[in-house]
Length: 348
Image (tube, rainbow, N blue to C red; front, side, top):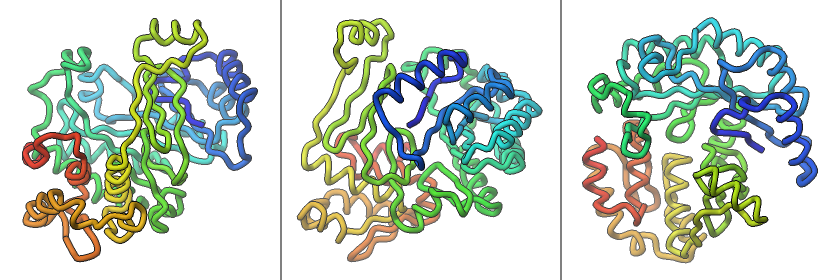
């Protein structure tokens, strides 16, 4: 069970307990279940952290984005370094099983030198997992981003250098590079799952639960079922109206075709393991890989020339350089993306 994104600690302790009990009345949880939530470190105190642990949460996540004050000011999220270390101290004292922090690269006024300091401070913070996300500047979708100084955004080449530096710094420390944007300590369950090829990815990020379905309950949340996706209403008015009338607050959904399932498994392998076994896809879906994906294999030849992938009779392997652009490589197999080759060129 996971509470978030958003900021679940917007709820006070009484509201958290009420929601916790309501969920407990409908579902039973294994004693080893992962029970996690996201917090905004600016709005918690020590008592709240200990309350969350006592009620039953065993994992916690919070966003740092960047330690640099100029960057924090530009994105209107000022979080003093002292406060972040204090909150982490409370979490460790409370005995949470795992702590994840989020960083974002590509924000205004960032460069390799300043973000390197953020990485060093994050290592000092000592979380169990670190997620490093690419900032998507989409003011036409998120109007609040119009307040961000566009001319202060780092250029694409600088963003790539920031990501490369981040991977080098974290992997030279105690973290393994997981999938395309996560890092975990070497004894973490994600690292173990990656070594045993059991790592999977869903809308919550990377997971060790390979075959689990994902049920979303809140506004905007997405459910990922075996052969379907569904998203709840985004507007609170529509969401509450559906619930008040006793129906599921689902705004839209899609049933996957056979081709969708084949492509999802191919993309999953690339994004989770940085390689793709043709034989495994053939056995799962009873296809001849090279014939089924002939157009995609032609596109991959361009990526091979750029030393982003290596191609063999049996496997497609993402190189170390290619892992920096693994999302774009996986997009080759996404039939819903038009002009896939052109999109990749722009991404570089």
